[in-house]
Each structure stands twice: as structure tokens, then as C-alpha cells.
Length: 300
Ligand SMILES: C[S@@+](CC[C@H](N)C(=O)[O-])C[C@H]1O[C@@H](n2cnc3c(N)ncnc32)[C@H](O)[C@@H]1O
Image (cartoon, rainbow, N blue to C red):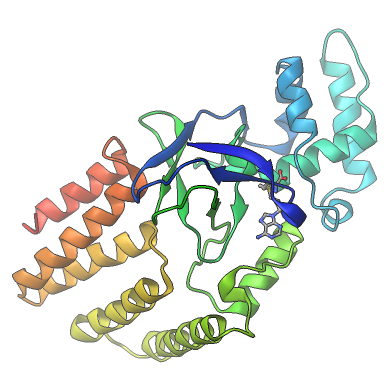
């Protein structure tokens, strides 16, 4: 369904080898390894097969970030600590360790419970502010599952968003990407010179302003629902079809229920659960939790 190949200035990337329908599970992977603290990186790395170690050493590194995240003394501490606690005693060079940690931080995913993990193929997925796929950790398979959030054409690049806040304005997105990963995003909505880019920015700016006014006042009930519907509309128009949109629809279902509108509650519940199913898969405990939440308000 996909292959990993050169993606130009982005390094490697993941590409569709055939058309992929919305909601398809593109890949599900168990972590190559998981750690909860940087301290565990070297021991975990050493336990890997030679092939896995080679692969991880070759993952992309954010050159801008390397000196900032890791000073020499930090690297030296881990290297010497490792040399004293492993058998046979071997000294990993400080430079090698520094590169390993930078590669780890640049490619790891947060998978909950303070755990960070590297995945073989998923770590090759590049970022877009309007992605066509989304990855979520699925505890039922103890792995990360990536689903298509849009129809993906054959040969098109498969992208996810690295950002936690998907509806953010351009300057905020660019700052986070530059700081976290050291690149300037060139996706269609980051290009302010196009009509698409300018319209997207305006939509996001307007909703941000509304949110500011909303959070200043003591509002609930109908106003809260109206704010949620504005956010939903912006996400829909931006093509941000991930779990966040599903969650917003589920909250709107609950608000409609409180406001005694069972028809609107059912419609929001249907849209939210549909979105969650496409992003998570029916085997995901998160999807089942959402289903239970909607059953509780009799919206399914
Ligand atoms: C998790 S890795 C993705 C795979 C990576 N391209 C590779 O060759 O292994 C993250 C790195 O990929 C690059 N990258 C991801 N998305 C990008 C984008 N939209 N534009 C430019 N570079 C990007 C950046 O170097 C980033 O630090």
C-alpha cells in the first residue's frame, strides 16, 4: 500500500503505491523500542539487533537542535554511565551518543504514560499542516496505527501532523515546527502567497479571535455550543479530518442533549463516531469509550 522513498528536501517520506480510501488502516506498527527517560536510551539501544541499531543511527537528525538539546557533559554522563553498567564494557563515543539522542528526539512519538517510542516505518512520515493521515496509539494492539483521513491518490505522499494544536495560525505552527524539528513547513496552507493559504489563515484567525472573547466571558449552554460549531466548521473547511474533529462533534452531541435537542445530538454523535472510527479503528479502546459516552446520552 505504501513505500518509503526520497521526498526531496524533506529526506525520506512515505508514499502511497495505490489509491487509499479514507478510513483505511495504512500501517500498524509495534515500537522498535520504548523508553521513559533519556537515561534508558543507551541500554535500550544496545539490546537491539545490529540491523535495528543501524537503522536508528541513520534516522534524520535536526541539525539546528542538536547543540541546544544536548551539551557535551550530558552526553559524557550517559556514555560513561553506560560503560560502567554494561557487559562487556564498551565505550560508546560521545559523538555517537549525541547523534543517537538527537535522532531519537527527532523521530520519537509520545505513546502515553510518559513513554516515547521509535517505529520503523512510522518514523519516516513527514509533516503537513493539512495532513491526509493520522497516527494514534492503540492499546489493544500495543502499537501505533496510522489511518487515512482523506482519500490518498496513488504516488501521493502520506503525511501526518506533528502539532498538538491543529487549528493554529501560521506563525504559531511555523514557530513550533522550527523549534521542535528545525524545518519550515511548505505545505499548501503555509504558503501565504496563494488564495488557499490566505483563506486558510483568515479562517483560523477569525476563530482564534472568537475563542479569545469566548474564554473571557462566563458562558455555557447555547454559546458554548455555538463556539464549538464555529470550530467544527473551521476544521471541516480546512480539511482537518482527524480525531480532534470527532471529539468536537461528540462534545457538541452532549451540549445538544443538555439543550433538549435530541435530533441534533444524534446527528453530531453520528458524525463524531464516524470520524473516530476512521481515525482509530473499531478495535481501539478509545473508540469504544466514545461509543459508550454517546450511548449514555442515548445519542446512538
Ligand atoms: C520523523 S522525521 C520524518 C522522516 C524524515 N524525513 C527522514 O528522512 O527520516 C522528521 C524530520 O523530517 C523532516 N520533515 C518532516 N516534515 C517535513 C516538512 N513538511 N518539510 C520539511 N522537512 C520535513 C524534518 O527534517 C524533520 O525533522
